[in-house]
Length: 65
Image 1 (cartoon, one colour):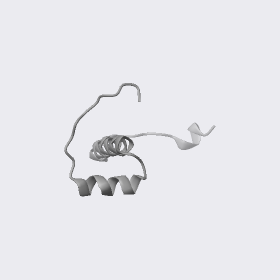
Image 2 (cartoon, one colour):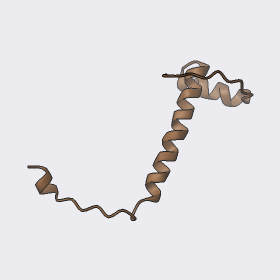
Image 3 (cartoon, one colour):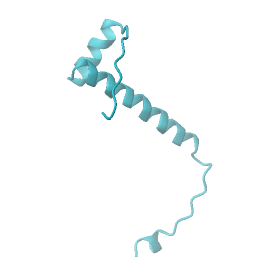
Image 4 (cartoon, one colour):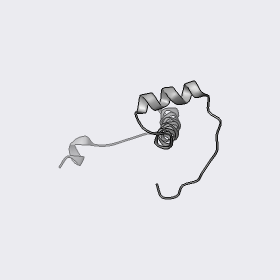
């Protein structure tokens, strides 16, 4: 982590316990992993919305030379 920010959050105990169990990590690393997953999902959704809208012309045989 380049910069960290200390936060206070009220997280439902059952959700937190389940997340901790799933990751096998501590609270901070579990929260970081969850936030990264949200970011990744948002980026993939943005890419999916572009499907069929971007024209891509590539000569595979030429690029493999």
